[in-house]
Length: 259
Image (cartoon, rainbow, N blue to C red):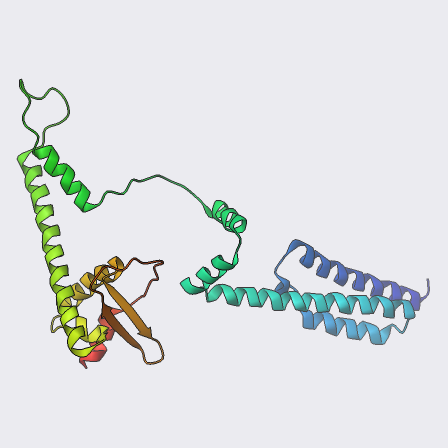
């Protein structure tokens, strides 16, 4: 074998290796950035200049095509990664609407990891059950089943009920205040409404307001361009078709506004 033939054989083997690498990444869905495309093209150009052979040119064209496919995979990979960084509730809702039922079910079953099933008990229903239980007349001959509730437990239950009633009263007062402000000035600025001299008071108002918003008694209108959040109270409870989270940093925002 002459030196030229040996050099041609080595060059072809290098091209075959490059083609195999590109095909392997494409078939197995590996990260396309594990391959240095610039280095491959430099090696390809150098070998092409040193090997003026027609058969090599044909294989070289195929190698260039495989490298171009690899670059396209890199573009697709970057696009998917960038899309994954900017997923919000609205985008997810839009994609769900566009999906068919079978695709949604398959995605749910793939991600579903059930741990435990829990029946939800509301404070209102729990209070009704306690009042009913405590109101039962004593049985003749003493109780022969169940358990005995101590006086301390009764006091704790009463304290919990009183605390819930206090929160309900505060929610009512806050809603009435918001409604009055709205009737006088129109849409109410969120920060102006919750702001008080003491941070604890501001935090409590924001906390209570979140309940009114969740329950459908208050609508929120946000203008990201002006960095404004407006409150619109409702006379009647509005049923939410879907819930969207709005993250608000109270401490920093109130601190800036005080200054």
